[in-house]
Image (cartoon, one colour):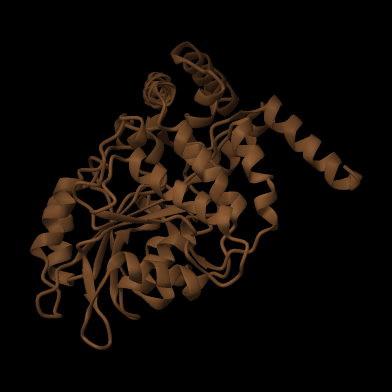
Length: 402
């Protein structure tokens, strides 16, 4: 590499990743094939538009890559192209969610999402995000005592507030989500606009790989729209997918029904983005093929096994685990007398990388919260098993009790 400064930094980061244990729940390690696709000559091609409808010529192979990525996305999650559409151009999870709202929720409309300190995501309507500036968030949280979702309480809020959209799927909620109950809630909420019911969107960014591997319930039987990033548990590059039911429509300005998929496509391009990153889409296609293998299914199940063991071991050592445990790759730990910021600093000094995180009913500030978030996807990719989690729990305990 001619640029020695960047080459030096790349090598330094490679060394850092090799020497440390990553428990960042939203990170993972991609395969050599994903990296090869990401660094391919598709980087050079500008492909504004969609397959068969590009603005520039020379799109023979970009069209094939995008169509292949679409078909693999549907196949991985056992979806029929007659029933579901998928957009593979969103650059990452935040713009994917923003595109869905732009397509389906009128400005000023209500999006009902989990509050940030209870485990929600910034793009689920939080006030510091564009999603909270353009739309109004109707927040919900977890039960104060059990620290899990109370569906009866969510139903009461939804019936009273009549949101345009309910969002299920979170960034720091360790338990499985009952998508059927969310569907039932959405179906009893009739929006003031005659004949239209509340849209159910699932953001499965954190657990998409677990769904693909059969280690977590699938939202597709119940959701109208599903968004996901392609890194985290899916183990791909930074990108996103947006799935939508073809039979779901919204009336346009002329009073004609338009499918959610067509509206979302227009929201992504030209609404939010220019030309897609075709090298990124090629890498996603590789990721989706890898995730369809028996080896990946074994991996997904091991991710959950590892998380359960890590949570239980920390619990035995006296650490409070939010909700009492986990059903996924994710663990939320109340760090007690030390803040989450200090805890993450201590752990980094011993080579364990985590992130500070708010906990339900957070008494401290988001910049210096009361907890840390742990995830097992990355270390499971590196081959970690249950016995390794037992050892890791001891290391975490020792670092935090110094």
